[in-house]
Image (cartoon, rainbow, N blue to C red; front, side):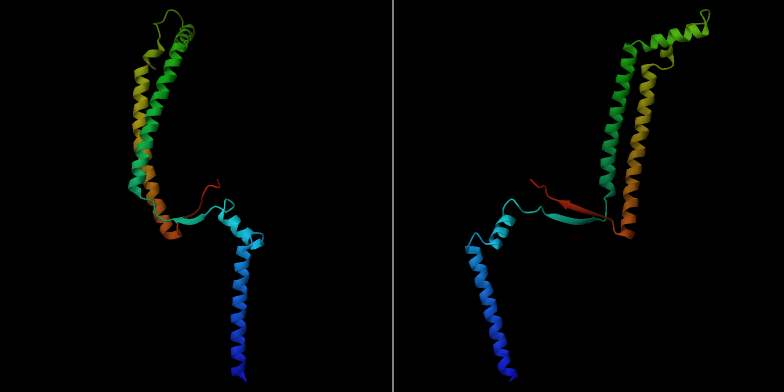
Amino acid sequence: MAESQKPATLGARISTAISSAADEMRASANPESPKAAERAAKTSGGRRPRRARLRLTRIDPWSVMKTAFLLSVAFGIVTIVAVTIVWGVLGMAGIWDSVNQMVETVIGEDSTSFDVQDYLGMSRVLGFTMLVAVIDVVLLTAMATLGAFLYNMAAALLGGVELTLAEDER
């Protein structure tokens, strides 16, 4: 009796599979069916953007050093240009002359003439700015490279940073 039930069960399974396949074919042929509308929405512009979950486990210290060096040199150049512009604007605005007059009134007329440009001249300020820019280039490059090494060590222990990247929804 068990043998007679197996073919009936198998036959029932086959007929169910065939009828569901036929229903799917009819649904895809009929554009008003809800399943066909879902498929059309997914394949057309209504699809969701793809997402990828990635883990950042290593940063190349050499590329970090090159990038940090380039960015810190650019920062140093910007600093030198900014100080030059500020010192030029202060000179054209007459700030140094007013500082000289104020110091002469405070000290008195009988003393030697005072000129703030002797102490804070353009050449001295730019020299100091260039020194600071060079020190910044060395320190920022070294700190960024050290940071990459430290991140690699921490990522080896903890697994790194997990990122989720997605396409634009345009």
